[in-house]
Length: 398
Image (cartoon, rainbow, N blue to C red; front, side):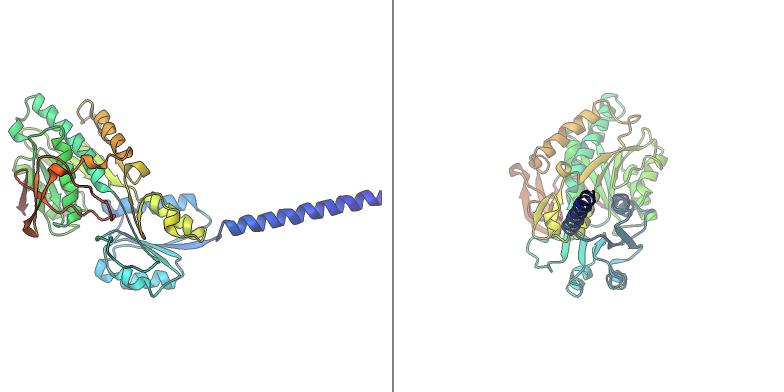
């Protein structure tokens, strides 16, 4: 009997030792148990761009409720980035995400080699030398812009077919912050999506020369509406343009196409559809890499160029939200799905292509013939299409 007890005790000891050994192996392979993650926002969640970016933080909290401690700073201007950045890095953050465009992030990364710095792409990174712990990322926004343009084009075609407007009145407006390639690429893709449905459509663009000003953005939208625009979109950071469309008093309704955040609550009668960059796939993958003590780019699924990464619909980095079924034209969802399926199959050359000539606003001698096509985000996550399409895009100044 004693022999049986002894054998049983030895067996339990061996099993326990094996269990402990396996646990240690699994724990080691799983990397770190707990990390600190920092977020620095250029604005707060009341603005569409920052709200959309903050959804990645929410997804992170949901996925790693016990393994990740999150610290955040809001309303940080690019020129004021240094102090909050140092606070988070000195406070032990293992990885920090930024949605601002300050060059300070890259410059200071070398001073904190044990912290990973991940910044929303703000320039062409293809020829840049950067620290190994500095990363840039962005969804291929032109894809969503093009698909939202299709939805707008379907609505304009319905207005034409119903006799509400004529072919000559197929005018779309765009409230734009600055004449950067990122903004120009976005509104060009949007117009080309519209023209894939309504070939006669043209665009008026009004620059505000600021990223975030409710008054200026709303006034710019009103100006475009007064010029006869029947659909407005934006690349700015307030709800001003959506409100202008909702409040418009014209012979026919003025519709709004959103970016980053649905405007269906503030403009239920005007809001048509919204495209957004999804920051969640990158943020979740980057944090998983740090937890596993691996290189970020080895975990991220996308088009990787060094430490710069981008992707579109095929990886879930871009999506369409809140198609207003009460407003959209019949067949809009199917038309959008068809274009999205093409992007998912890798047909990314369908956007910047056609019988168009583009002129570089910074150098009129620099032109591009789009009959040969242009591929956006080929080597960098930052959009580089920087040409104004002759005869179809008009630039206004507010």
